[in-house]
Image 1 (cartoon, rainbow, N blue to C red):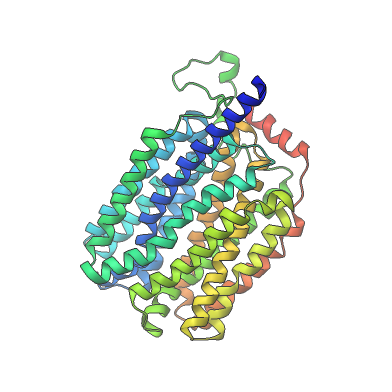
Image 2 (tube, helix red, strand yellow):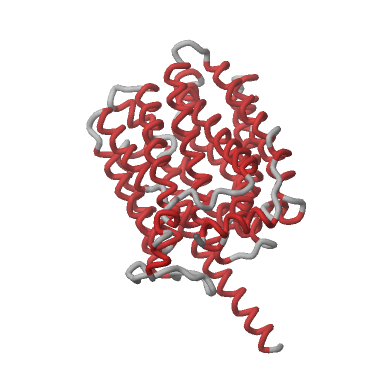
Amino acid sequence: MSSEESATSKDQAVQRRVLSILAICLALQSIGAGALFTILARKIGSLDHGTEVFGQSATLFSLAALVSTPYMGLLADRYGKRRLLLGSLVAHALACLATLWAPTGAAFVAVRTAAGALTAGLVPASMGMVGDWTSQSTRGRWVGFVSGWSGIGFVLGPPLGGWIYDRWGLAAPFLVAAAAHALALLTALAFLPSKAPGITQPSPGRVEPAQKRVGLLSRLNPWASIPRPYHTWVVLGAISFVAVFAWRFVEPQFHFFIYDTLGWSSARFGLVMSGYALLMVFAKAVLGSLNDRYGRKPVLALGLVVHAAQYVALIATRSPAWIALGIAGSGLGEGLFMPALNATYLDLAPERGRSRSIGFKECMFSLGGLAGPALVIVAARYLQPATIFIVGGALILGSACLVPFLFWSASDKRSAQALISE
């Protein structure tokens, strides 16, 4: 083996190790988040509140994330993705405890709002790290691998949280969730390097020459890595927005429909959601390379169409088996479209703008998460659950119709690079 082949093999081994550790951290974090997925409604119920408080908390969570996320991406690019990842994990752990101890509906909403702002850096930092450690030809596979392993938390978390709640009561799932976040923090702190080889980033304390300080306001602009041309940015943003808006519009009604109309237990609900997550993880980890092989757009469109399965099931039947199958199929769709969407953002971003590019996507997610619950608070007073589910499914299918309008060239990335360098 030549020295060049040996060095390449060593680099690949380091890449695999770092991305595997990152995947483990995100898996632990998502176990904590997933354990509370079916429990937040129980917490709200213990405070003698219902759909309205659920919608308010989800709306303000997303509003806080909407404001925070672009700047979190900027901070990750300028001061280090690892630092932001660690800070986000600390915020996740503290948010679990604060949510548990919230004594009133207003306090619950306030805690969720603060959590939205302080945890918003997790995805820009982690996906930015994936971009730093991968090339474009293998990026889809590694995005799928890392996000797939993070999805394991949503396989294990919901049934775990439901089972713990049914056995030990309300406090136990929140304590387990906080412990999972803390373990993820310790793993990242001990094993993740600060940056990938060859990636340059300015020292926070360095004094820059006067001619570089002239462009300070431009470099502090969190939108500097918006993809070009603008029609691409608009279409990407619209797809990202709708993918989350549809679910968050349906989610408050969905939870109470499951509990109050169908009469499911927390454990049963959690088990069904783990089926969603299991197929999502399979698609991300095993099928993530499809968008490297066949292109981002076909896989993105296919994933969105398949993702509509849960809405179809909720509209068409009350059979637990068919609803569980539809929810699981929807997870398969998310596992197909999310790696393709993330890889598209990373492909368009320059080296020093990757976290900002993902931050823009997360900002669109947050905007969808803000608008969805806000509208359903009003819509639930006038619309039947089936109508709300129809709206959600129609929006997802509509977003798939936008995918053919995505196109870009190498010059688009050079344009973004020029803005970052201003």
